[in-house]
Image (cartoon, rainbow, N blue to C red):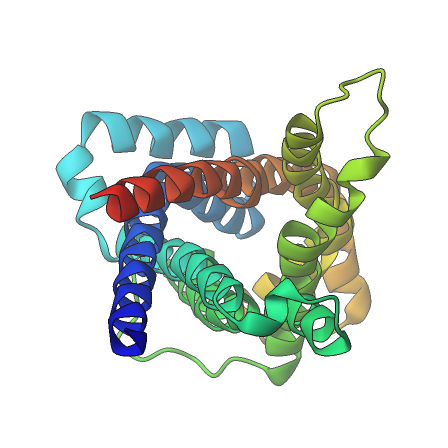
Amino acid sequence: METCNLRNWKGKWSRQLAGDFMAGLVSATLISPIVIVIDRSVVERLASDGSLLRTLRTHAFCSILQPKRFYSSKPFFIVWSLYASTYVTANATDTCISQLPTMNESSTSASLTRTFSFLPTYAANVSLGILKDIRFAQAYGNTGHLPSTAPRVPRVAYLAFLIRDSITISSSFTLAPQVASFVPDWVTGDPHIKKTISQLALPALVQFVNTPLHLFALDLIARPHATTIAERSALIRSNWAQSSSVRAARVLPAFGIGVVINRELREVFQQRMIGG
């Protein structure tokens, strides 16, 4: 009997993980086109005096009018891999934690496990996210194509990206659910809707703090020989407002809408897998 129960538990767990995997892949496919258009446009705008809106429009039209070229490109694969890995890791971590016996207890170990449950997602997103930003800065910050020999990336740029992503990930996967209760009841009394509102709003708002770090790191990679801090600061100040707004719009699909879609799809796929 005990062996049978263990086999059933393992079967249920594996089906839940399959649902996690499918939800993550579908969610990444839905939001990646928006993310790649915005990220590439911000990098190209920083390296030129062109209009950000014009650059956004150009790449958006490319995704619609030249889908084969757009969706088969290396930049799309990089962005898709980043968010597929992020969502799948977040889903699988939640599923694994839910299977731990201590999670049903109000214990210190259970509290600590929940507190640090974002770390696997953080590791997956930050490592691939920094790689993506470096490749984009090298490709579109200067020449417009992926170089055969990439220049050395300053350590300070890595640090800036790391701090930027730490703020974004913690606000998206840890703080957003916790601050849902602060949404006023006159907005909505439904806890599920409050959670959705905080998930959409908080990651976008923190980009106004993150963007100077983002622009600083991109400029270090694109212009490694710029001589003064004042030179870089002037560039960051001139691009902060517009780039912050665009990055807030970019984070909305990636860590707002994307997380909500992933959460809903995960429930649907897991129910179907378990029910099947």
